[in-house]
Amino acid sequence: MKVIRKAKENLFILLIAAAYIAMFIINQNMGIASIKNSFYYIKEMIMIMPVIFVLTALLDLWVPKEKIMKYLGKEAKVKGVVLSLALGSISAGPIYAAFPLCVMLHKKGASVRNLVIILSAWAVIKVPMLLNELKFLGFKFMAVRWVLTVIAIVVLNFK
Image (cartoon, rainbow, N blue to C red):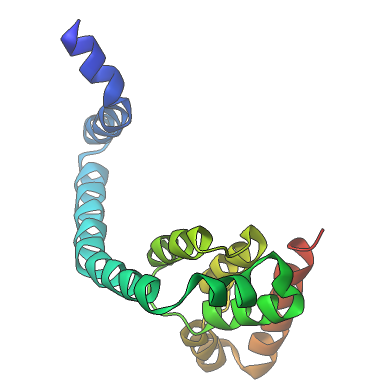
């Protein structure tokens, strides 16, 4: 009974292990590549997440709840949308780094709409991404994609 309970508690991990084993059986090279990729991302997260947690904790201490509610809360309206777009756009790092920050902002009164805008901007309109697009795809592509993306983010987040 204890084994079955432990298996149920760790079902996700067991399914992942089974997927790796299946990859090794089907194609050993694919299995090895997937393990290497997994370790690469785990290492990346171990290096990035402590810094994100410290920064999030400092923001939690330094920024009063009233300020978050005023600028990112439900009543922030256009001001909140613009600030959310700016916060997401100037961000650095992978999207998973934004989640602890958004959890803290939500606990302090930021609206779900503004959090979704921050996450969306973080994922698709970061300044470093725009600079790479400019370099490889040109100004016209970058500008059109940026404008359409911002419009989509804003329109999809209003009721």
